[in-house]
Image 1 (cartoon, helix red, strand yellow):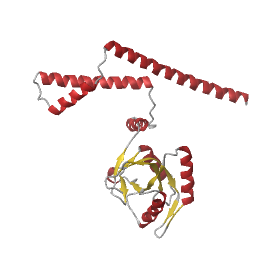
Image 2 (tube, rainbow, N blue to C red; image 1 turned 30 degrees about the vertical axis):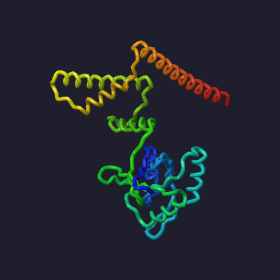
Image 3 (cartoon, rainbow, N blue to C red; image 1 turned 60 degrees about the vertical axis):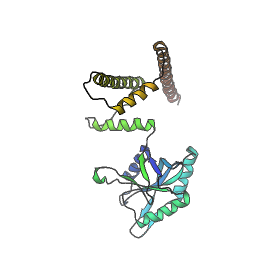
Image 4 (cartoon, rainbow, N blue to C red; image 1 turned 120 degrees about the vertical axis):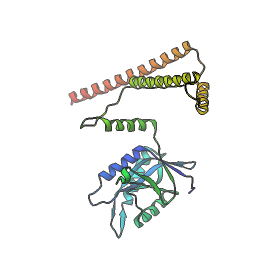
Length: 261
C-alpha cells in the first residue's frame, strides 16, 4: 500500500461506530465492524459500516464471519458501488487479536485499512487513526452530512434539557446565505477603503485573492441577473409547493386507509 494513501471517513461512519459501542454487551471491551466505501487514486473513501458480533478474551477471539458475509450481501443489494475497504475497532490499542482479525479482512479486500476510534476520549477528544499501515486519516463530509453535523453542534449550545433543534426551510437558508454574503462583502469593502485611504498597510496576498475573486465573477447586466434570480426563485417556490402538496396527499391517503379499515 502506498505511503501517500489517504483515508477519508464520513461522519455517518463515526456515528454508527459510536452507536454500536454504546449498544455493546456489558462484558464487551470493544466492538469491531466492517468498513464499506470505495478506493480511487490513492484515496480510501469510507462512507458506510456495520458492526460484526464477536467474543474476545485474553486468550482467544471469535467473530461471527457468517453474519459479516450476510450483512455485506445485503448492503450490496442496496448500494452495489460500496465495497469492503477495511474494518474498524474501538479503542486505541492493537493486540494480537487485531492481527488475526486483520488477516481475515485481507482475504475480503485488497490492502484493507484498520481504523481505530478512541471512544475513551483520551485528551478530551475522539482520536481516529489507521493502524498496520501509516495512512493519513481525514474527516470528509458530503453537503447533506455537513448540514446534519451543523444541526448537532447547534443542539450542544441550546440551553434546555431536551437539546433539540429543528430544520429550517429552504427560503430561510437562502435568506441566511444572502445575509452572510452581504456581511462579508461589507467587510471586504471596508478593508479596500481603508487601504485606499492609507489607514492600513496593503497586503499583496489579499490583493491578489480579491483580484482573482473579481475576475471570476460573471460579467452580467443587472437586469439579466435580476431576471435569472427571479426565475430561480420561482422554481424554488414551485418545488416547495409540490413537496407540501405531496406531503398533504400522502397524509390524506393514510387517513382514508385508516377509515376504510
